[in-house]
Length: 261
Length: 279
Image 1 (tube, rainbow over the protein chains, first blue to last red):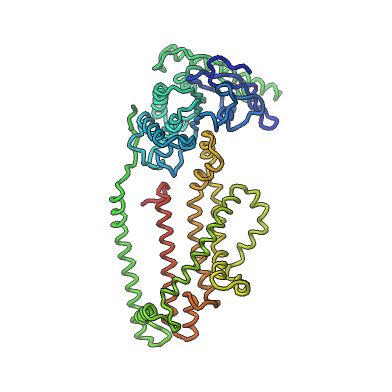
Image 2: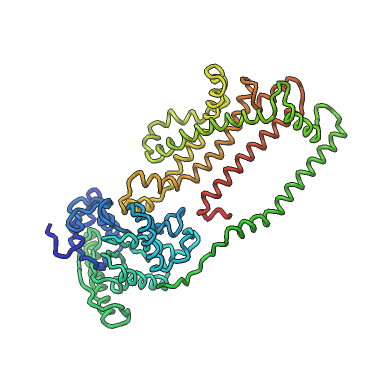
């Protein structure tokens, strides 16, 4: 596999659970500091893909390279924001945010500085000593995002991080993530099944088919930020993505009815 | 910069919280003291009706308590020496049970295969009451070893079982968070598994302490060294003196209660992050 120039992460993987093919030769790369959104119908193995990208699951075939070397969580600096609540209930907000730095054995004065900076950035200043049960769900997810950005990660993986939040909170969090990302440029891979979210956030969008997942579209988002979800260019791109997904649905449906007949 | 518009439960200053707890529990404390006094007075009045050496009143028991505390029993051993002897044995056996039970329980919880394959050997021991081991212990051990052995048997299983069962409560997502950052297995054990299981372990310790205290009294009643609360009570039973026996009983209750309270306080302090616990 050749490393594309400027690529931070390169993936070329197929994965099966037993004999069941989940991913059918997914091949893509992400540039340094790029914000990539991956969309697909539910059950297309998005979480499995992220586990492989994080290096905690080995693909049955192929490899994932970060800076040209196989991904390794012990060496590479990877962060992950999960869909479900993932803060440690026995740690305060401060200690939760410091978790990644602690595992990476960051010297304590550097750790204090980094956690302090990110606390300000996510607006959790004043809540350092709170425990997760004392803050709202949105704030808990903000703690998880702060934890992910605190480690100066090479790659930040986000697995539908706002799916359990209500619409206004969700929209605010999307703007907040962009703000943090603009302050702290990082390579981000953001998985979502919400096209509006993908068009709002991403530099680029990859659309996956249902299992076995293949890449059916890989398109840039040439809209300058801040993006207005009501602008024609925004709605056009969203419609285009929706068209790709819709075509997938109908062809899958036809296949099913053919096999049934 | 982002603003915090979400509702947050404010953290009251610690001192204010403590004051609030004290004032809100004050009526309960007063009620308890009041009920206790009423019972004691009724009991004392009853001894005026049933005047018999086999039915001593609270005052006679208090008298006996002071006498035992100051002058000691027939062998010259004071109440404190007896209490300390029992307490010391409990602490040794209980400590050994924790040292063995926590790591073994964690091991069995982390590797359920180990437990599944050794179940037939381990489980039957759980159903042999420690008291049933007394005859064997009398034959094989003497002194502290005998008591520590019996208490260990009583205290081991609650700690062991709770630690093993608690491991299942570890959230896969917490393990995954640590793994993504490249955490070692040891880090996950220390920072994910143990904090999750600790509440279960402390719960097991409280049960174990109850079992240990129960066992020590039974073991001392069965004979052996002349020190210990159980031993003291048997001596007075042979002399048919009831007040010292009741002093022993009440002291056993009081010491067990205090140890349980100490563990409860530790739990509340350690697990203040749990929403179930309001300080």
